[in-house]
Length: 297
Image (cartoon, rainbow, N blue to C red; front, side):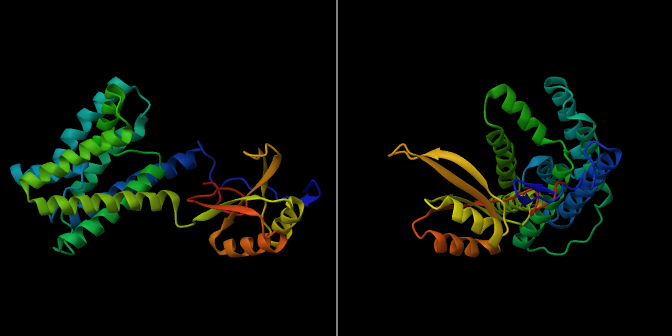
């Protein structure tokens, strides 16, 4: 099939149709798998080393030290009331997945409570526990789910206080980590901050992947020649944007092209060979979906 004289690849249907029973089942598999990974990481690394990285799981670690109550029971006791309050004040937009997540995660904590402890080095525990929790949360988020807890509490604070959602989450996690400094030691709280940082970075990796790409914006007096070089020599598509010079007011064409990391040098060489005076802006992008890059889920 051709469009404008150029070959166009036929569009492929996504492997799983969004909203289909198989897609819904896949999301629940991600939710349950993520909860299990989080629970295993909590019981193997964080809880035995008394590292609270925030959230209801961090509170349960602190309360276990004070009351000797199994963390799973504490998480149920906190998750369910917070969920009911969120459903009442914020509506039913969370749906069944939030309910399942609020119940299934403490259950996973309960059934993995007898796992072995690979290390008693708090730094290793913070790093690997943070990776495991981040990996599990990444799966949960990819399944458009939630494990409830302080994430819902942060949404309540965000709605009724006007604070940003990110700051609201930071407040709750910060209070948990400060409490861990009082119950355990300040050093444990510092390890908790390391674990929280590793968790957030791991979530980003799971959500966005390692397939970083570059977006290039090219302004040149030789638009046609550069367009042909990109289309035929680099074998990449491009989009032409209309712009105007801020000083001259003249109309200019801005070419936008997305390339993989290993294509950046070739793109710069092609542009330079056509127009050494071309103005090129390269910017990093974390994820690209579509033809020639990552397929839509």
